[in-house]
Amino acid sequence: MTEPTPIRLSELPEESASENAVLASTTRRTFLARASTLSLALPAAFAACTPGTTQRQDTTSGNGSNGNRGQGGPAAHNSDSRLDTAVLKGRPHNGKTTVPANAPTDIPFHRYAPELPPLLQDGRVQLHWHAREAPVRISDDTVVAAWTFEGDTPGPIVHCRVGDTVEFTLTNEVDVPHSMDFHAAQINPKEAFRSVTKGQSVTYSYKPKYAGAFMYHCGTSPVLMHIGSGMYGAIVVSPREPLPQAREFVLVQSELYLAAAGAGARSFDYQKMLSTLPDLVVFNGRPDQYIHAPLHAKVGERVRFWVVNAGPTHSCNFHVVGDQFDTVYLGAPPATAIRGVQTWGVAPGGGMCFELTCDIPGEFPFVNHGFGHGQKGGIGFLVVE
Ligand SMILES: [Cu+2]
Image 1 (cartoon, protein in one colour):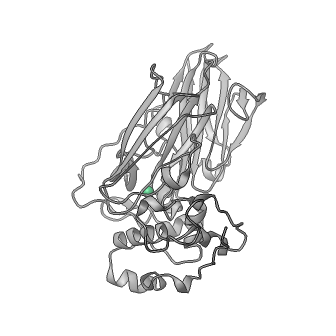
Image 2 (cartoon, rainbow, N blue to C red; image 1 turned 90 degrees about the vertical axis):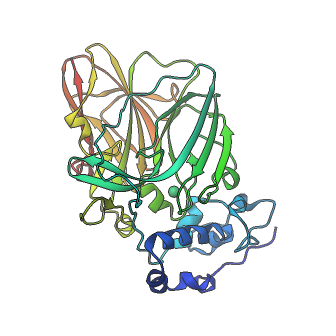
Image 3 (tube, rainbow, N blue to C red; image 1 turned 180 degrees about the vertical axis):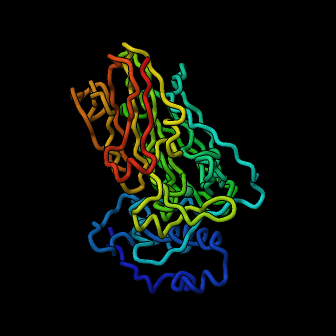
C-alpha cells in the first residue's frame, strides 16, 4: 500500500484558496455546491494530514488513496464525515441555506407525528427519497430554509426489524450534492454513502444487524452544514422477538443554528453551527410542539421512547419529570437492560431506547435535562390519563 501524500490547503484548486474571491464571484449556493463537489474530489489521504487523525485506508481500498483528486465522478468518492471535517477544518465558510425561488410562501405548521409507524409484514422496506430544499414552519413565527429528505425535517421515521431488507434510493433534486448515511447499516460507505449531484441517484440495500434507534443523515461535506440544515432522521430497528407491548414514540433531538430573522424564512447558519451555541434545541424539529400538543398514554400502559440525537454537536440528557425509566437498554434491545434510571445521555449521532410504566395519571414533562439546552425547546409533555 502506497503511503498517501498529505495535501496542503495551498494545493487546493485556486477558487477554494480565497473565500472572498469565491463569494465575490458566486452566490452562496454556488459556493456550497462547489465546496461539496471539491470535497468529493479529495482523497481520503487528506484526512491523514490533519493533526490528531490517524491514517485510514478503508475508504479507498482497492484503488489507492490518493489517486482520485479532481478526476472522478461521485461514484469514486466517499462522503465520509471524518474526511469532510478534515477538508474544511480551519477554512472560512459562510454557508447559509436559502429558500428555493419557486417555493410557496404560505407555509402551514404541522406537528411532527412522533408515533412509531407500524412494521411492514413482508420484511422489505423500500424507500425512494428525494433531497429537497424546502421552507419548513417550525413555530407560529418561524419558517426555516431547510435542506431535507422528502421535504421535511426530520425526514420520515423508518421502522423495520433486525434482518429485514432496507432497499434505499436517494435522488437529488437540487444543486448542492447530498448523500445518505444510515447508522443502522453495515456497508461500504465509499459506495453506498457517496454524494450525488442534481438529477443523480444512489441506490443500496442492507439488513440491519442490531436492534435500536439509529440516526440517518446526509454525510456530504461539510457534514456539519448538512446535518445542521435539516438532513437527518431516525430509523428504528425492532428486535425479531417483540419487546413487551408498549405505546411507542420516536423523538429526534437536534440543534438549530439560525441566521437573523428577516423577511421570509430564516437560514441555517454554518458559522453559528461552528460556534456550537444553538438558538433552539428541539425534539422532532420544532420547539415546544409537544407542549402545545402532548403525547398521550393511559394509566397502566408501558411507554417506549426511541430517542435519537441528531446533534450535530450536543448531548441529549433524556429525563422524564415525575417518573423514572423502568428500563433503559444500553445496547441493542432486549439485551443490556438496566433498571430504575432517572436520566441518560444520548450522544450526538447515537440513539437509545427508554421505557417507563404509567402507574399514575398526570402531566409528565420529558426534557433534555441539560437545561441550558432543554429550555431552548427540548421539552414536551406526556399526559397519562
Ligand atoms: Cu446533504
